[in-house]
Length: 337
Image (tube, rainbow, N blue to C red; front, side, top):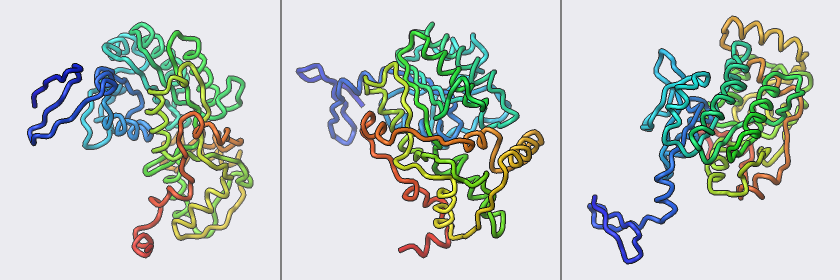
């Protein structure tokens, strides 16, 4: 492949098959920009990694030092930097040449065994300081609906403190508080589906299952995160984003059952009782489809304005019932015309 220039000094890339492809100045500028992504091995991080490899941006992922090989998306080659969020020297090295940071890393998936102070609070503070020192242009942070320093729930308190570190910095930040994010291999619908299949006849609902949620399709969130880069209105702003509908937890279970082709009768169970059992299972590292932070999320309504995503990000988010076909058993998929 060779490169020549036209009269406007616009680079023209010539491919061997004889076709000519004109590269826009915006594409060239993006090619020169480098993104550092934390939390790349998580559910959302994997989707975002895939999205960024389809753009003109360069991508580097920050990997926490572990003995086993990191669970990165298969078939995608990315540059990696190995450092913990509490290693300032390692973070400074990882920041070399970085223009944009997407911070998704969190300990919430570990439940009671997770250290929110070390990762979500102090780790975020360290990352912000390293980004400021490196002269990073943009800083994106993924938080939760309900984040509040005065919250009774540790995860929501930790997220609010992390937000505060970012907002007090000199960085051009964008903070997104999200609702429940779902999709294939998620930590919401997949564990619930597993539990629905494993318990005959009934399904335990925290209290009456009346908590309102606003599920957001993973691909919609990935688009919001990537499109925000080119949206000047998102600089130094905090947005609350969710799906196009507010559904009770009970309604979500009903919609899932319809797709899965099963029926379970709702069984209201005291939330404190479920919490005690979940904490006990967490500490014993038992494989259960929930953790204590997941229950915290269901403790109160987690909703936001239905207009933010369409108005700010020019996106019509997907309805929950239209995007959960991945839960349908193979034998039922064959019957669907």
